[in-house]
Length: 188
Image 1 (cartoon, one colour):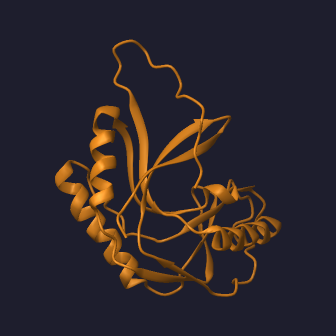
Image 2 (cartoon, rainbow, N blue to C red):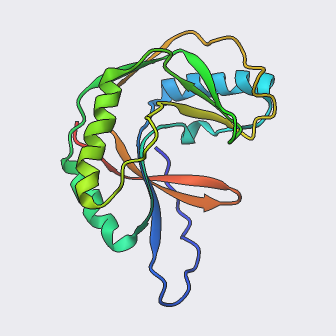
């Protein structure tokens, strides 16, 4: 999993230092390579900017900017959390038109993944984070700024994703993109 060695941007004196955090499933190398191939196929049809293979993930919970004094406690608590083993079948492309995003996800509901998502939020809400109001749409972003969203390639061959843990990730902006650093892994 990726790690960044660059330091964060300078912060104004007196301003709280914040880290942009999210929880995600992170694919192994073989699945990441498959998803990178899907991204290349989607780009040929839709245009846009391909996500780097090392950044491909499925977000479970976006926390946003978190005061750094809370990060250490969250890292320690994450290691004590358990994610029930589960799996999903990635077998379709989808789009978020307003954002110009092309993604890969399951065509059918994924009850085990929904349960993992819900249990994660059940833990996070008493810690002060607010569950988003919109329904959870499991997806892996493949392209950003796609221009031809109505021109998707044919559905990819189904790919199974087995998981038994999630990760806490810090996103750091760098040169117009994001660098991801895994801070903690749930127990498995």
